[in-house]
Image (cartoon, rainbow, N blue to C red):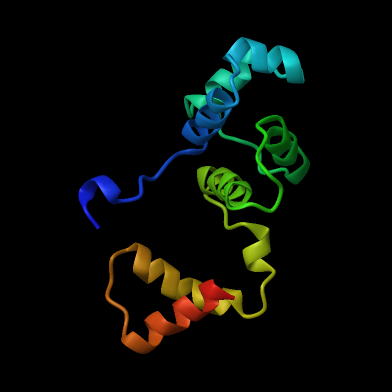
Length: 128
């Protein structure tokens, strides 16, 4: 994978703004259409205001942004909101045995080497 092909890590705000612009709304027109406060949405998009992780609130934003329910973008949207809060998404925590794999994820995130067996366990969990 070349540097230009490497995935970029987005913040919740960057993703939100990208989706809003992609569906053709200015900040003001988006807020007028869906009844949101322009100041709050602007702060969300600039990552000054941390997003809510309330499921109904996020679903409302996702629907307004025309993100298809149960799509990869839907999941990314919710994951970015949780990451902005430093929280693990509840759907991951509700998976059987997911808690026991969190230390593997933490070591990987810290850049520590995992054994092939531990790496395979992590891959298997993520593929479930």
